[in-house]
Length: 526
Image (tube, one colour):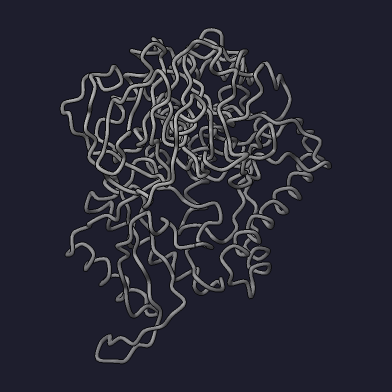
């Protein structure tokens, strides 16, 4: 198998996902890839020639925040209807499919968000193999299809959405008002499988183990005998990138690890121990703690804090890179850019679609660095990166490590950051992690951490009054991190963690547990 470029994959059956701005669009592509079929996401206004060159086996239309009732909102390109291939519309995708084929869409009297019971009205291919005629599905919409378009029939309904699914009598067009891509929908993956495998007739040719050898050869062809610089964080993305480069070019890889002073306890020693001492990578460690602390002094606003941390990291990395480049003749910069980074940072063809957020990895290079980019995992999702890391031999302490935000502990300290509250949070977080691993709970939660709160509370420790800080514990369970449930950790376990934190940290008087889900909360506190 070969993977040649974003629009040149002749040997792969490909599903095109057109993005109308949904928060779940990435989940759609991931669900397709989980079936062993390659998928790519493009904005809804993709150029017709790009669609033709991709030669998709089928097209999925995502949901979105807009209303088809309003003028100048996104629509399906006419090219799509001329391809004579299967189409699946989801939420907004269903509504614009209906509207563009002569149906009617109306604003609902009340927005529907959450679970609904789906009644299957027609024995459709899209619902083959489901165990029941009534499914628990996930809704998230403010409009609904009120009149079926010509040639379409009703295939499912809910109490609040009489037309919750529809399909064309003669053409392979299917549409769902609910979201099969989220885990809250019972049988959602089976529905997607029915569309991809049974309706689109796609072959399962997407294999990560084949991809590894191919990517190593691509790196060798691109880099040759030149040197490559990689910013290594110790996270999964940069670690997998490092392993691929190491296998391709060996000691011509130079890794740089920036200690920003916002890392977890002993993280520097662990990264050096694994990558420099055990794996034997060419690793440079930059101590930039004082620089970060200086720039963060007096900063309390969460968004400003993120910007300061991001900007300072870029400045430190760029300065060190320029110095290394001057002495080592580095020709390439490697980055652990992954597919969600690319999707979220990309503009639409018409410049009308929203950019969700910008990423340093997708923004280009400083002019003075004069290096070309190497991004070997640019088209992979996070779960695919983890699987590739396992195949490359990365240890579980990297692969199964809970996600850690780019700004580090800086977003887990509410209010101003200083060395004292960093130290408190590091120790509390280490205790929480130690106890989770000791009790076999670490792998049962998706993410767990401590938060330093900008308040003090009165406590009594050893018959003495203690007016000290408050630490919040946060643990969630999730599959995709788009939604999450708080983890119902055992009370005796939480009590043990709380006792250790208060007893071992004299600057803490109280520990609380966050029982908020996502939504309405976010996973991180800032």
